[in-house]
Image (cartoon, rainbow, N blue to C red; front, side):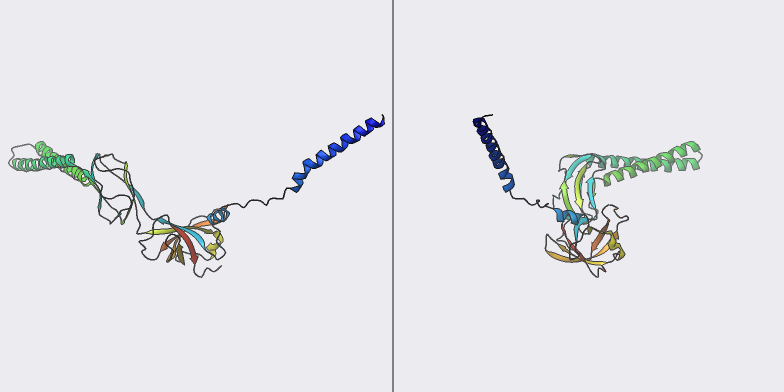
Length: 274
């Protein structure tokens, strides 16, 4: 191999080294990026029942009762005076149905029942005079009882023409409106009992060593920025074997009309004993 060939090979090798160094330089100069923080990790820990450093635990307010009201009979809706968010008192009429047809059937049944009673009285008198047989008396008695049963049935039907509030609360959602036709079992109103709110929380199972029903706590509600006294009402019947947590329900000590289901906050336990 002559010296010109050797010189060409050395030049080619040098160029390959230079290109390799340039290609590796950006990778070597790139700074090491720290692992991105996981957003929501503290929230996930709280959801698993892990208390804050100061011993607080996350809570949510829930209604003791939430009901979907529906009609038991088929009829046109006459009126629904309450709208979403409206408050009502126990016993107020939330839905009125047009029951003119059922009312007419009731009057007819009452008239037939009155006639059956009169017929029974006549047959009883004739039986005393030995003018009719015992079978006629029995038939009159059966007709009177059947007529009375029909009246009771129609009276029960007419009473279903108005749907009253079972408790003090508020309307969550209207699913129908006046002049629409109500079908049995189809929801018309969703209502919630706002007078009896409960606090739901998940606590570490090791707290069972000191946490008992009746234990006092205070609750700071985020949405209103106020603190309310409460007591533990119930403790869950089982411990989650994976998270080692248990469900706890607490009750507010007094009425707080400004609080609504779905609000959340922090619970602090008195004399925790931890």
